[in-house]
Image (cartoon, rainbow, N blue to C red; front, side, top):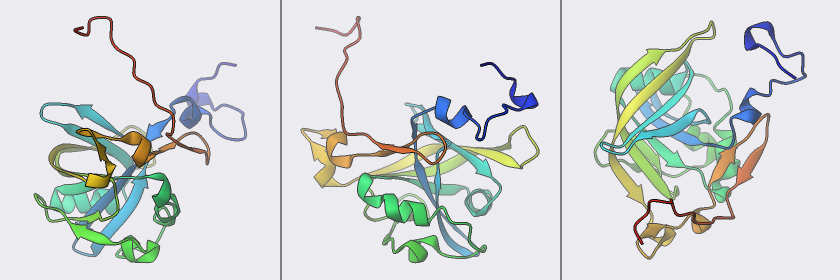
Length: 195
């Protein structure tokens, strides 16, 4: 099968998201003049190490509007145990509705920015936006690029000085309505790694 996206795919559902998978889920928390917001984004990823930078993208909804207003947001890691609450926060609710409250998610305050974070998240990135740009298309999609200004890691998820992903069991987004839990890890050294 071959298709050009501009001409459609002829399938019941677009395979694009299933091809670009797995994707980490950025559980984005923001604060704006109309209150706090929490929403999951599967178009999220890390961009650079030094300084650390991340991005997320989506429609012009509460999260991006709040970042436009305040310039800050937090990215909360979604572990297996948080999937039910994360799913609740994906619901389209009226502007100003507090998804933390709707999903029963406890808030904590960030340290370097004025923004709530998910208290139970294994790790949270505090972020200051550097670019907020419109993307191609008619559905009003935007991309937010930000510098990470603070990082929270819960001690129970650390082992021998490393974030232990076997304890975190991070959730990943696949295609359609499919998700995966990362449970199997292996290490692969690069050919030029020092002995």
